[in-house]
Image (cartoon, rainbow, N blue to C red):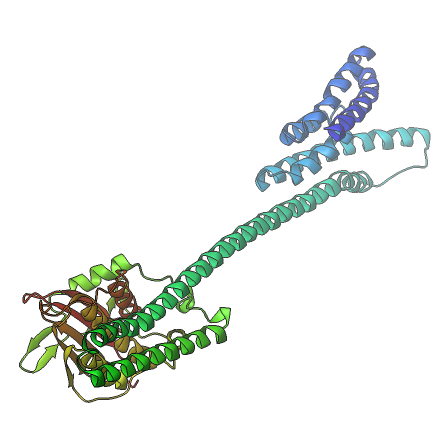
Amino acid sequence: MALDVGLAVVSALECGVEGVAFAHRVSLPVPLGVLVGLAVGSVLVVRRRWPITVVLFSVAMAPAEMGFLMGIVGLYTLAAADVPRRFTAALAGMSTLATFVVMVARMREDVAQADLDQQDFDPSGWYVPVVSAFMTLGLNAPPVLFGLYIGARRRLMESLRERADSLEQELSLLADRAEQQAQWARQEERRRIAREMHDVVAHRVSLMVVHAAALQAVAPKDPQKAVRNAALVGDMGRQALTELREMLGVLREESPAAGPAGPAGREAPPLAAVGRAAAAAAEAAVSVGPAGPQVPVGSMGPGGPVGPVTGADAVAEGVDGPRLDALEALVEQSRQAGALVEFVVMGEVRAYGPAVEQTAYRVVQEALTNVHKHAAGAEVVVRLAHRGEEVAMQVENGPSDASVVAADLPSGGNGLVGMRERVTRLGGVFVSGPTDAGGFRVSAVLPVPVGA
């Protein structure tokens, strides 16, 4: 504002001085010519808001030979402003033409006066237009070109500023996304550790409690059997400690960057959506016929087909964990605890990836733990089916035997949830529920990659 007011004052003074000569030429009172000049020159104060008006005033006052500063500053402001280029070109052409006409007329008067004063001065016909053209370009071209340069530079700076703001917003969004992924990774790691702790501790400790109850019952009657039960309790405790040491060793060795952040930062599928997908396949999930359990492929997740886990996922599950070849020993431990367990293997036995084998083992282990907790004395059938691109497991128990005293084991209600999380994480289907005979059935299907 200070610059505009200062320029307007200088322009008004210039036009006021030029108004004196204009008043003499047109036979007007000098004060009136000065007032006209002051009024016209002061229009420059609005050059930023209405640059077209300023240029039009300068063009209109060109015949009166007033407002040269106003014309120069007006052309610069017009070229630098966000005005359509066709308007800028038209007004610059008008100003140039008006200035050229005024220059030609003024030069002709000067040449005529020089011809009267000096009889030997005889300029040819090219002198007046050429000199007038040079003077016109000198007055109009520099402000227009400089204004175009300043306007382009200003628009470039604004574009760079907007781009910087946009990049800052994108970086902020990326930081928020990274924080969300880190939070999800921490939650997934907590769930994984909770599943491992639950599977390792719950099964072993449940069997130890069952054996301890049997030891208490048979100790007065059969000391030899009590000794065998005590040895079994010790073996199970040592196995539980060994598995806990292996799991804690993996946790100590894993780096923070190896957390299960999911492939390409993909978010974990919600359990509700996975539950709906499993419920949709519940009716055809497991059917036991003459040929054994018929379990369909269940590789559909909430977002479509879900493939096998990546190598990072396999590492997250712990490569040194239990495998399928340890299921026979697991079943035998339940038999030694007094449970009636039948183990059926169907299909060609083969090895799978560590994550698949550990998940299958944990599902069977947790299902047998639930039998010890909630169905004491019930008959149990464990089925394992090897097929082309999948492996299926089913643990089904009948109703509990009323004559068998339950071990009164506590339950946190996390066993089925943990099994479902394990299975759906590998792209499989998990189904559980009561049977018509009054028992309970747990079924899971895990996809196996071709060539695994």
